[in-house]
Image (tube, rainbow, N blue to C red; front, side):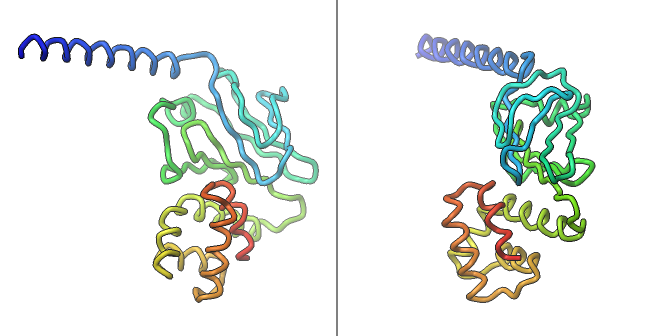
Length: 203
């Protein structure tokens, strides 16, 4: 029995050692896989002025970069500064995963982190009033962060999160608005980013 316990212990120690080594490799590597979604498709994604792709973007970028720029014709350019203070959030341990519940707003209020290495960027159309943009932004963010709770409320035909979402759109919570949110949830197929885009139909 003691021999069996010793063997199990050695296996566990070996597994933990390999796991921690793998974590260290991912965290301390020179590149990081990132995803950048945007309310505008085919917007240019640049790292320190060099084009690395277009939205929706998923790819590896160098960790020593300073600024990610997202820009599209007819929209105001948005920048995400990758300073040393971002290290724990942006380059953090991607093995542990992340949820929309740990959302992080950035200085301009137009980009937020919704997973360890994923960002949602909202570009402001030139000529659009800032208050209208903010209303869209807050509605989409609330929908994405609270999608699971909104789904539960829909199944219960009402609830705090569902009502708050509808009120953010300056609408009255009732059967009609509940049905609209239900249809948008179905259309998004459980994808939080897609739900965020669809929910603006409430406005």
